[in-house]
Length: 247
Ligand code: MF3
Ligand code: CO
Image 1 (cartoon, rainbow, N blue to C red):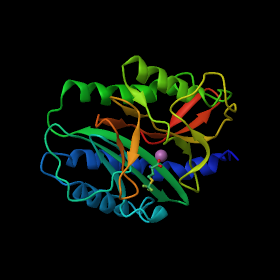
Image 2 (tube, helix red, strand yellow):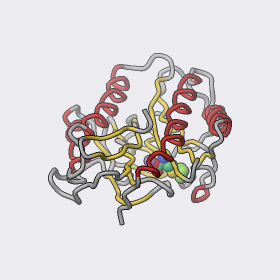
Image 3 (cartoon, rainbow, N blue to C red):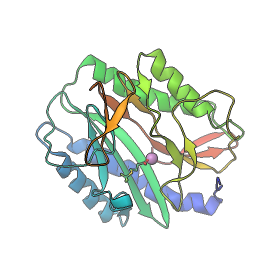
Image 4 (cartoon, protein in one colour):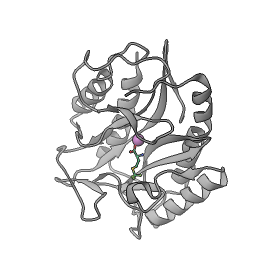
């Protein structure tokens, strides 16, 4: 069931969402060759807690860290560890913060030093997929228009979108209805109501979309080893457009 938020609930979500935005920027400022993903996770956890919030991912379904840090061919849910980032890598940081009884959720992909043209294009197109998806999005828009627009833009650029991981509603729970796929057919799905809060999160792969999950039970990687990028914001559907809470 899709739960529409009251204006007070949306106001309560502003702070955890702002903390997500600021944590992503802070972690991004720490990304450089030589740093480990565990160090990035520690920076994020410390920062989230310094703002009086909790890292929602830590302990979620047994997840062992505060952020997901997915490098190169890792698509999502990379577990931070002793892996050292090197120039030419890309790293997707996905994190959630909990405060005021609500969660915020966002993701960005960062370049480590100089990256090649294909990875630069992948990061750019993944961000563009998000902005294409919210173009014209407002109360009354069919849900799967979001995924249709993400998919169209990714594929027009020679990339693909994964099917196994999707965006979602968010609020008192990190994952609420509805699922928000990054693929689909325009004009289908429920018509979104005003004050629905969604996480729209294109996950785009430079090669084929086939993936597998590593033995750690979390990390999703492309089967063909091609790089992947992730860009996510928490947004409110309004009568006349969307309000982005994590920008
Ligand atoms: N931000 C992620 C999402 O949108 C949450 C990571 S799942 C976790 O689903 F289990 F790793 F926390
Ligand atoms: Co999410």
